[in-house]
Length: 585
Ligand code: BES
Ligand code: ZN
Figure 1 (spheres, rainbow, N blue to C red):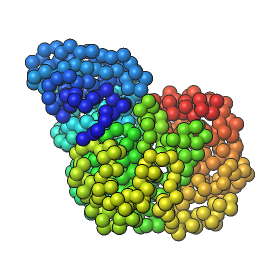
Figure 2: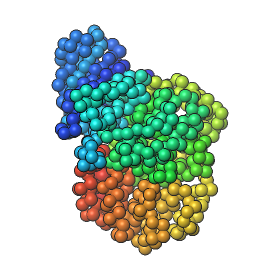
Figure 3: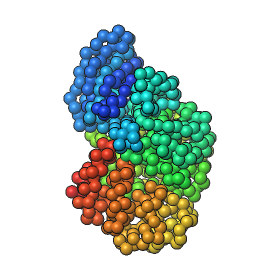
Figure 4: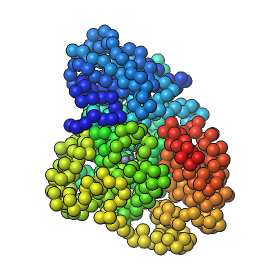
């Protein structure tokens, strides 16, 4: 499918390619490793191949048909890619690797019983290129393989592999072995597990939420609208490709809002009690079609995954919540996008505001921004306007039929757009400029809603909101994000006094306020800010909050908090915050 090689992987065209993985793991909560893990790869042919690894201990490589050892080489460590494990695939085409993870497993996060409410907890995060730190694999989204997995945990715990099929749980000698199947080809970054003290609740015959007993009922209530999202999504894009759509609520240190694993992983910050953060579920569900089924072939095409998904999320929200509400969500995303563009400009990296640029030397995680989300969604909305809604919807169906189960590169996407929409639409839209040039083209579609206007009227003038009660949550957030910054400490104080924002139940709103307050130098809410930074490890929250503290002259406070908080942060959050400190030094 793909034309070039993925620069973030050592897999090369011509190599034997993995078509199936049989994965066996047993988390060792004491040592915080996968101590005795095996990955058995089935390849499409014999001959030379290579797998990506990151700080793995390779114990043995063997012919899984005969049991004979296979000789291999483990290359030297590369700072972005890790080390290449290469060998020759034998006649039977099945090769097993026995390995251990190490403390360098950047894709794993471990929690002690004290940190996780009485029982230990562990989970994996694969996207973008961290799967190789807990499973040796062709860690490029241009290779997709089926997966069967067994996870063994202490009997008191549950072991999940993110898969739509659960084959069962067998308890023996105080241990439970749970086996799972993904009978569809998936990219390596979706290979993840979670293990801990989990309960589940069914939302529908094909939807279930998992989470700690303390929150699982709240989660079932919060995410109930997902049945409507599913109906809307299937009406637009055809049958959901995976049969089931389950969700796991992770501990608050999870570095993302959500992750589209085949059991969707989400932050507990979504549990606002009023379903006001459920849009994230629409987003992760939309990845079922866009990202998981049709997958970006490399990380410089990441905008393909997120752009189609945000566009779909927006259409689903529009179908379920109405256009006014959906437009509000886009406007909020636009503000994040604008912040990212300004930051890239400040840092002398404005080229990263192009949808597709040369990132071959960089770690995709270190350049994560809303460019891939907002700008590419706007390009798709533009194509929808120019091509007409009916034609656009047909083209989406063609896209799913043609590229489903496979991967697509930027060049292939552009050829597809030209072919389906025609030269005229392609040129009028200026697709090449959107994709390859930095900045935000002037033919972007408008975003408008009376819900936006209501807020802007007050925010632009830096006035307090009219009265409490009648704004929906995203309006509060928009208001806070739109106030000309920095506001004065007095203004922040008055906002907090009147509306109780520093203790708001909706985490997004509370976070927006804390950032605003930090930037304003409003010291009274420092305890709340500190508490927030200890409680949540989501990157989106941590990065701007530390940055705001630093910019308002409280670098010492930021450093003190981070020194303690980082012990509980996921490696990707810790390194992102470290970068904030480095770039502002
Ligand atoms: N796939 C992403 C999360 C991701 C991206 C993880 C890149 C690692 C590398 C997920 O679908 C996502 O976009 N999450 C958003 C949710 C939001 C847009 C509703 C997030 O976490 O902010
Ligand atoms: Zn996404």
